[in-house]
Length: 289
Image (cartoon, rainbow, N blue to C red; front, side):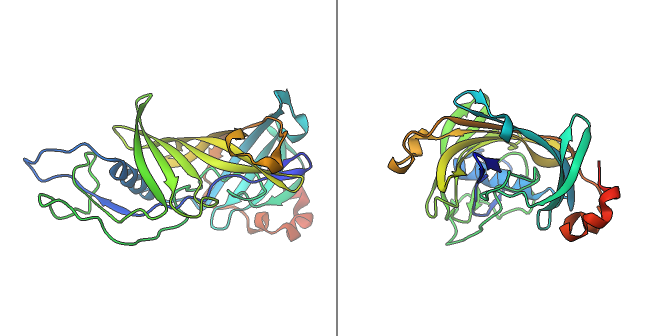
């Protein structure tokens, strides 16, 4: 995404190991879930939802530098995206209208472009395995179902993050993640998970603002919700992460950015020319609104 005549990287490469979660046999005492069990249940829940082939949404961006609104880099886009490759047609939006020419973009995380699409799975980048945790003697055979109560857990060892419980925050289980390897790719640091449903409410991640040849660290807070039964990103708040700055970035101003993902819809199909910018000229009179 553009700012200070440059672009900003958006989010995270996040890789989390897989797991099989199941309940204890009848009559056995239910143990409280540990951090890995909670993470496994979150991942299993996300995998239950099929990713739509297309998503249409409005991206509202507001920027500020040292608490002064940055109008040049604040804008609203209407975006028609093919999720198989994140190819997208975008147009500037004013109120309920879209105006101007079509622009071809590829929304993505960890790239010099605005983040997106809202259906992106932040936990689905790397799946590495290095062994299986040993279950307790009382552990029953794994079940293929995913009941709401977590008891004993058989987990493929998490190789990209160390996962610990940081307690309860606002009624959510707060998980803290630390990258075991490749911190530039594995950027998630915190997850906030509903204690009863294991739905992911919020995440915190490292990000970067690319400007004037520098990559300036930023802290992103990401909110999640459901649209038509699909987990989506609903909002992102980012600001300069001064704790991660080094001497090369001395004197960096406070940059803040807010994104809202609105008007999210999942059409069954979209015209193929939306995703081929060479055809935009021939279809100028058919641009979507």
